[in-house]
Length: 148
Image 1 (spheres, rainbow, N blue to C red):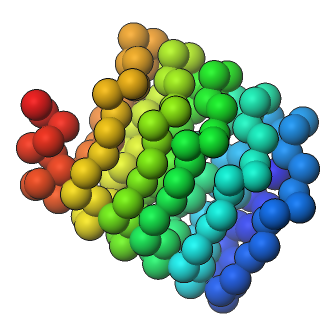
Image 2: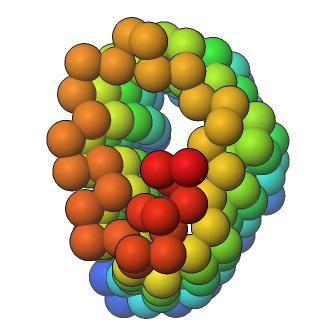
């Protein structure tokens, strides 16, 4: 599914309810620069076998909220720029993310300027080698909460 909707900048609506993703291992660049999409419902995605989610939602600049609590990220190793340039994102549920195997989180929340709250208390970063620019250009309110 890598690059599946890549640069579909005119796309305004998308129904993904019937997608069978059980055998998918790579979701990188899937929605890059889908800048007019306002909603992306990924609740039916089976991500059990996915190892790469890098740049998955990069540049989805009109999406305001994402609930990814149904995602199984046990095998994911790359989350680089996953939400980068999601400049309207103000609600993001990552409560069930397992990051035990992730090695790259660089730029993961880069330019998520409207994100005021983010619960990453379950994140295990023991294997992460790259996390540069992870919260670059995020709100000061978000940065202050993460430091606590």
